[in-house]
Amino acid sequence: MVDAVGHPACGLQFDLYHLQKAAARWPSEAVRCAIRTYAPRAAHVQIAGPEGRHEPDAAAAAAMLALLEEGGYRGHVGCEYNPAGGTSRGLAWAAAYGIEAPREEPA
Image (cartoon, rainbow, N blue to C red):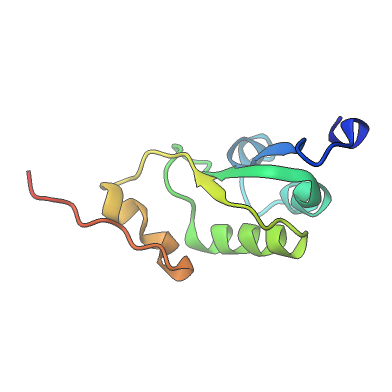
């Protein structure tokens, strides 16, 4: 459909969380193939760990982000998940990308 519309403002909402769920987790050749195929058409990407909708596994996130970049995706990646153990702990995987988690105030 994105190709049929053919407008630069039209792109794919690429939901890697649900793709992983449908493919029975990462790593999966189906997920890798989908990323390679659709990354050039993506306008928005969102990720989460497929088990429990928590933060993504650091190794899986690194592999998916590398495939997106190889495929030409240059946009932002949204993280839609419930962090296990609080926000700071739930963002620890993203430190490799220069994202620092906020310090949590004691209750």
